[in-house]
Amino acid sequence: MKQKLILWFENYLFYPNSFQKLISFLLLPLSFIYIIVILSKRLFAKKNDFSLPIISVGNLIVGGSGKTPITIKLASNYKDVFIILRGYGRESKGLFLVSQNGNILVDVKTSGDEAMLLAKSLKNASVIVSEDRVLGINKAKELGAKIIFLDDAFSKYSIKKFDILLKAKNEPENSFCIPSGAYREPKYFYKKADLILKEGIDFKRVVTIKNAIDDSLLNSSKTTLLTAISKPKRLLEFLGKDTKMIAFADHHNFTKEELLNILKENKDSKIITTLKDFVKIKEFEKEIDLSDFYLMHLEIEFTNESIFNTINGYIKEFE
Image (cartoon, rainbow, N blue to C red):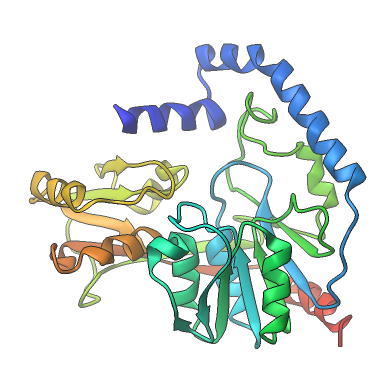
């Protein structure tokens, strides 16, 4: 039932049917109030200049658009880099140094799944989680940061930064802000970004599916997708047409019982999951056989060569 509700809400936001469109229109007064609040926050915000390059990778719509893999791809090209993010789904509060120069300092329950994936993927960078991004920036400066990447911080108007906005390959069918649609900020705010990266034009995703233990390639047509990311149906384009999907809410923390039941009920199928999900699943390596899982390794390929020229131009302003 919970999985059906998640998919229903996803369809409501991105691909509404006639009934869902009716609900969307009825909620428009709330969206109007929401937009007024957003515009007021932007209008009255006073920007803090931290005197070092700060790059935000974000999007205007709810859910994922590839922020984490794009951040990994960009940050891997620089030294003395810190990535700061809120840490959605973590069981901790406050500021934590998740990793320092690739050295993992906390567990996934403290960091959250996205922060742990960033920490494990970037061996020469450091990762901080903090609800207060300004506090996180000051901590990064204290620890010697030369460049800071902010995850999903376009709406942090009080921070002077270089804003990158990602555009999904398939954008929502309506252009309303929440709760009537999927936009967290008015669609015309794309014009306020310093750089817009459109999937399919500026970058593409390349997916390879390998066993979690021995890196062997997937060789079965009977597959089950297990994931707890936003808009899980977007993963199906990389899988067989008969793939079964088991979807939990974004950032859901799996339990041992859930995983054991899923493995039992799908014992004749290959279980496929994302790297973001696997950083949580791996916590149960003593109770479950990790070789039962296949991982979707996602690589970002930039098709627009001018992207790094634009970003490097911004960074050189601080030299």
